[in-house]
Length: 471
Image (cartoon, rainbow, N blue to C red):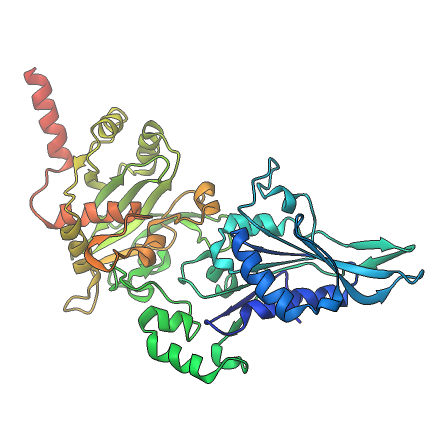
């Protein structure tokens, strides 16, 4: 049995993940009498009807082992086969709750019935339903060390959180936690497949194999963590489009010699270092802006090579940022030595006026959604040279990941948005409108740049001076 701090049971439909999770928790209670565990799901109705009633009570714990089941408090006390020096049975406990069972006023923001206890183990059924913040909050309850009974302290030697879940997208925080080779946390993943379960009827396996296709076949039959069907930028691959600062600084690469100024490391396991880097002389620089407050405010800095290749090399991606403050940050992050050609922005008159007062002059972006998507796709495709015309640099976001976005399990930079940017309801005319603010800014840039003449920043300032002097 794994003693890692965090364990993932990942697999297809019918693999027996939920039962294994229940059995693991029950085994830990039997091995360490006096233990206390928690079984939890996002919604209480799911944890009781499926995990507890159908699995734990019907398939795992024998009726004769249950000492008491308090349905009001959601606590099951069961015998462990051990007795104290006075001959009294040592009981272990299993609590079960949903994360929707009322919020606590405590710092961890968990339901009171969870937040008021500590546990030796926590089993999260269908862990992909939880946000990373909720997972971290549950980990904070893993501090149960044991119980004293009959003059003896019965120790629980280690604490653990584990989950059973179907696979999701490779961009999901849980995939990054358990499968990212750079992750330094004590996390162990176990893959399961329906074909590994000897108790599943052969007809069930054959029916699944016949009826599932595409992403659903790969996720729910093969148990793979794959992206969603209907992904809009299917041309994008990390190998072709995601490049490092070291690559850009290498004079032997096709993109010229960039100048790395400095790097800054953030204390987040799956977040790259931020890199301050300058494009080569002669490259034109463009900025693209999508306004937001509850949603992130995004400003991107792109460099255009003489060979018409775009590189995203700097990014501001932050929620709850006032436009006035964003304007100051944009000025600070823009090097006066760059050849700044233009800044494209969403059509927000007040926002653009606020930016202008802080020295950030903008041009209204061309916003046709479908045409803009096609312009991005055209640049993602490889040309006759075998190279795309659009790249994203690792570490281009030059500030700490937005904590609010991290806790909400939302993208924290533009590249995070790509795998979940899909067509709405399989309609390849309308994209799903969620977590797309960086990609909106990307679309503004490519479509405005590639379709028709645009007034340059110098021309815009000259025009403003002419108009102002005329008045």
